[in-house]
Amino acid sequence: MSDGTATHDDHDHHIVSVKTYSFVIAYLFFMMFLTVYMSFQDVGPLMNPAIAVAIAVGKAIAIVLIFMNVFFSTRLTKIFVAGAFFWLLFLFGMIIIDFVSRRMVTTPDPWG
Image (cartoon, rainbow, N blue to C red; front, side):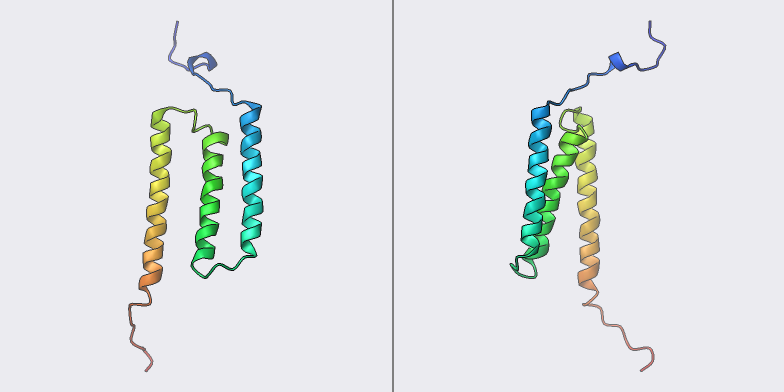
C-alpha cells in the first residue's frame, strides 16, 4: 500500500566502487600537482589563465560526475546539470564582453 510518501526502496541507488573513488582521487591529486606546476610556468599572458581554467573545469567535472552522483543519475538530472553549466558559461561570457567593451567606450571628462 502506498500513501504517497517515498521510501528508500522506491529509488534505485547506485553504489560507486572504491576503485572508482580511488581513481577519481588520484586524478584530482594529479590535477592539483599540474595546477601547482603550471602556476610556475610562463606560457604567455593569454595562455596562463586559459590553462588554469581548463584544469579547474576538468576537476569540477570529475567532482560533479562522481562525487555528486550525476554520472549515475537520470537523464533529467544530467540535462539540468548541463543547463546550469551552459548558463554559467553564458554569464561568464557576458562578464567578459562587459570587461572588454569598457575600453571601447570613451567618456568625456566631467571636470575638464
